[in-house]
Image 1 (cartoon, rainbow, N blue to C red):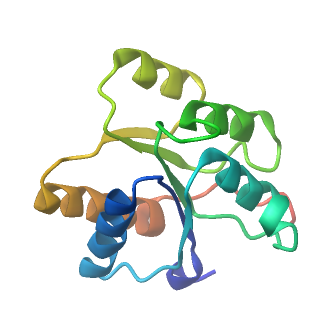
Image 2: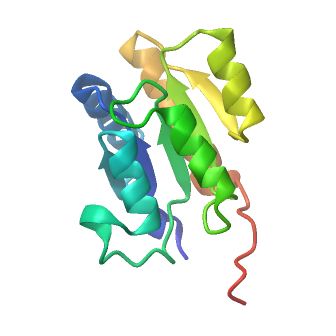
Length: 150
């Protein structure tokens, strides 16, 4: 799989933060497909091939999930819990990308197996740099776990 084939799943309910993240990726020449889920239910449907994504090939999973915590319907902590409980998704890289600075959120996220916890910078240039670094690391440098289908 080439780097351009790697999908980013952005789970973000705030349209402004969604637009900023996509703009920052493009600005930094990260041209991978970005799938956006606007709440926890939509994210889980995408990952498990249910609901509106029932026809999706779930053998093609994202290279990284950028997951907000404060989401409608199902929050980010519950999304992370469900991902880590399921054999199909328990090893997917999950980066918490949130405005929360609550210590409890950080502890819960790491306890449930998030790979990284990043607070969203308020300034666009800082946010753009954070997105660039996340994209470069998770799409270029990180070695994903081997596929079981070998």
